[in-house]
Structures are given as C-alpha cells and as structure tokens.
Length: 295
Length: 161
Image 1: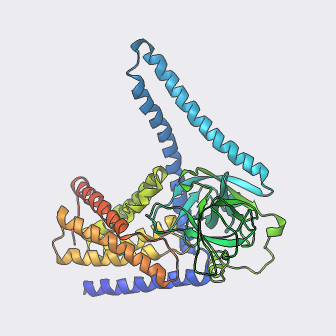
Image 2: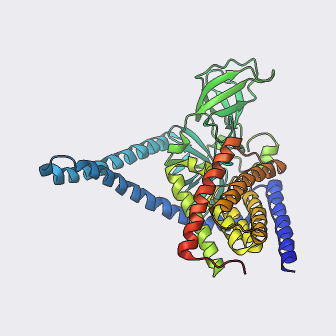
Image 3: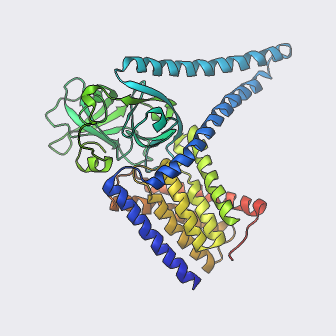
C-alpha cells in the first residue's frame, strides 16, 4: 500500500515538474518559486562569499608568516609584522587596482551603471552563471548587460531584491549579436566551443558569411542589434577561422573576459536612448531565442 | 526531525558549492553535493523521502546555479531519489563497495538524464564527455562514501522505518 502511494507520489511530482518546466519554456521569465528560493538563498551565498574573502586574506597572511620562521631569529618578529602588513597592502592594492579599472570603465561608459561583486559562480557543468550581490532594489533589471573592464560578461536572467543571476557569454543559451571591428561583418556568438570539460572557453561565432574577410586576431565587439547589449563593447578576438558549411564561416572567438577571475562587474542600469526599447513590444527571453536574436 | 536534518544538509550542500566555487569554478565539473544529499536520504530513509529530498535539492541547485529554466535537476534528482530509495529497500546497499557503485551510477545517470531532458525541452546546455562523466561519477562516489561514513558514524542514522 505504502509502495503504491510512493509510486503515485512519484508520478504526480514528475508531472508537476514537466508542467513547471514547460510553463517556463513556453512563457519565459522567472517563476515565483524560483524567485522565492533565489531570494531566500542569495543572501546566504553573499554571506559565505564575504566570509571566505576574509578567511582567504587571513590564510594568505598565515601561509607567508610560516615562511618567515626560517629567517634570522632576531628579525623574525619584525619580519612577521612587515610580512603581514605587506600582504594586506598587496591584497588592498590588487583590490584597489581592480576597483580603479571598474570605476574607470564606469566613467567611460555613456550609461548609468552600478558596481556589483560576484558572490557565487558556475555551480554545475551544464550552465554558466554568476550570482552578484546587487538586485532589484539597487536598480538591476532583467536582461541588463553585465560588463567587466575587459569586456562583456553576460546579462541578468533572474533578479530578486538584493541579488541577481547573470548568464555568461559561455552559456549555450546565451547569444550576442556582434560585429568584426575591422570589416563590420556581423554574426552571433553562441556559447562555448566543444564539451564542457574540453578545456576550451572559446565562443562560437556563427552566421558570418563566407565572403567576409576574417582573420585570427580580429577584434569582435557588440553590434547593438540584439536589444540587450549596447554597441561597441569588447567581446573578444578571433582565434581561428574555418571554411564552415559553405554559406557561413566557422569562427572561434577567445573572450576578452577571463570569467574565472572576475570579482567585480558593472551592471548597466539604463541603456543609451538608441537602445531604450521600453516602448517596444515585450519579448521574453525564451521567445527571443525562438526568434533567432538573443537567447 | 529527519526533515530538519535533510533541509540542513541541503543548505550545507548549497554553502559548500558556493564556497568551492569561489576557489575554482572547475569543482562544479567533478562534484555534486546536492546529489549526495539526495542519495544519502534515499539509501537511509527509502524512496519517498529520497525523491522528495531529490526534488528539493534539485530545485535549489537549479535556482542557484541553473540556467533560465529551473526544474531540470529537480526532476532528475526526484527520479533518482525514488529509484535509489527503492533499490535500498530491496537490496543490501550498506558498506563502501555497494555505495560507491550506487553513487557512481547515479551521478552518471544524473548527467545523462539532465542532458536528455534539456534536449527534449529544447534547452541548450553544455555537455560533459564520457570521460568527464566518469570522472564526475568517480569523484562523487569517493567523496560520497567518505561523507556517508562520517555522517553514519558521528551523526548516527535512523534506518528505514
């Protein structure tokens, strides 16, 4: 009897999942349940990230202190103090440098942006996402472009009060309309090349016609045609060019952002007037994917 | 009480994944703490608890680390929790050897089913190679068996009702 009840429960839950997934695929956007779970757990992730930053700083200091023990005994104590101070300074200098670059970029951009810290990154091999510590209350909106000093990181795909989930350019569902800076030929980057564990983090650049002149090293920037990313932002450089399937070339692009090392990002709060589509018909991310622009 | 411990374990898995991800994004390719929680609950408390734990753990994983569509991991872990729980009541799956086999197989099946489900719903995901899946299964199995042993020893277990 109990086994039968378990089987019925399994069937019911499987059906419920299928309906929930289909609903999201059909309508796009973020479900209430997803919002609730994300809203509840994002602050915990934030706290863990903050704690780890402190522990890492302390640990680095500790490791270096152990090395100092072998030095001259009379200078040991003095060395310890200096070493700790130096570690702190280096850590602060590195952080200041990162922040300077972020602020420098912020000043260059003709858009209102906000600085956010990455609190969690890529937890499963199937998707490529970050969680950042800024959300709706800070002015972050769905589909907002996310940038690093070296280029485009991705876009916001879920947002709650004080956190947001960012889909990276590496994700297979992510697409950006781009153009080659040299020739102006347009195309679309789409996820990373190869399997998740292949070691490659190159992007696939699709729909560049065979007649276009492309060579390794060419700079790839956003084209501003996908209603999400402003025009002219750095995406990466062409790493290889192949013949493709006849109509289009097969191009790989090395992203300009090293996603593993991103600590702070800029989230675009308001897009330039030519990219303000607030009066246009609303197109959900899933629908947009079907229509072949950006997923 | 077991619900409390289960929720605590899922929260622990989320914290562990967040902490490991801070040091290396590559950890995600070889280790799935959410699956370990679901499997442990299934082996310890049977199919009903296993599938419910799998569903909750999967949803938390989907929401925190998944893509635009949530529920894929939830569904995969729900089914795995049920199957492993049922197997746990039919066979004697105690001790390191059977558990290594169960966790390895479950991890590989989890990956394959998730990739297939995503394809059915036209959700594009990255895929792991056969070698990648095997490594993920192996690491999960080894870490899982050690963790299961530690939990059994220090926290104690309240076996199938």
